[in-house]
Image (cartoon, rainbow, N blue to C red; front, side, top):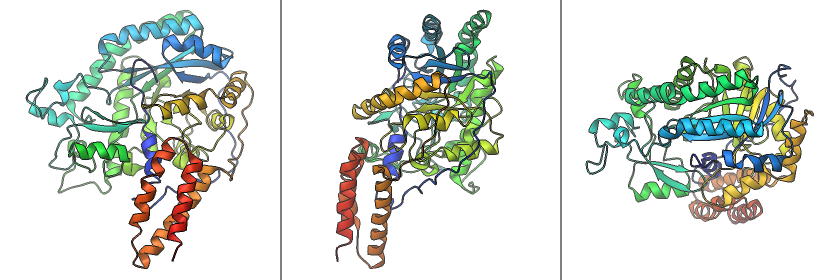
Length: 489
């Protein structure tokens, strides 16, 4: 995504997880969206097309896109991420350099601040377990997440952003010590240089160049019982627990083993929503307009793997923002997002991490942009970042394909974007349908007293890698062979 922060893509693991046969279930197919009246933007409200690029990549971005909008209502721009804990001493300089690049190239700018993923330099907050390493303090167990009411506290976090990796322990969102650091970073480190740059833009009559702040990085509560093969391998190598995280936050919010929540994912989702509101409120109290703040909630993921509901993006101090890859429940439309927006009065919103070319997607670039802009979105931020090689290459190829470039230029020229129906003859849809057939065959075997695990393991050993590589034809062939096997007497 940027030289300032390691790229991240959590939904790859989710997309693989929904077809893993050990779960023996699929996410229900999204229904075709009925025709709706598009939400109209105010005539003077800017809409932004952004790309997560570093300032030095901006000239090449302009050359590639070949259009930049009218500078008032439709604007091309770039977004710069920052790992706030890691980059604390560089935040002011990073902000200044980003605004210099925006002014020099007459492009819009968005800034992204992560507060909970990248914190390897803050062992003074998370090292509760190793007296031989810097920062050791047994009380740090209250700053990281727990696997149960009595623990254990986590020693590491495992994330798959294209390739599985170990990271410092997952942060406890409700920790008083952590929240004090968040408040300090927003109040003393981020907003002073940001307000200085915004004042200069306002003096020059260029306030519209600032698209806003992306707040946080898909806050979730991990569950290592529901994860992909690569991540599961790391967990097993470390002999780490495999259950649900979040029990430290639940205890901080008054729950206990004797008084557990009625639904753990609902309760954890409320913690996430309250945490996002804490961040956004801190920005507003420091002088940043709520109209320029967007949370970062993973809209395509399910509660069993993230505990992060769509509604977590809503609070009184920001516009809602989501990751909007067209996968899972968003595969055929963004209807789940539209439904949630309607419940909250249809406010402006952002697709803050987007790309029409995520593995297995069905939609063309113009329709994908229309799913956003024709329904009240103020911005779409295109992401190409991931770990490994195959996924970043696929995302970059999608982001700058001829189809995508044509759609971007159409939007930036002020033309109306057309939403085309998703074709029924798509490999991913056929795969979904055939997975249903295969699972029905497994259930039939189980009713007959037969064990389908051998076939399931055979598919599981082949299918995830093919899907991660975007090799849908080969993936479909694997499922076809499995269906043949379960239909044999």
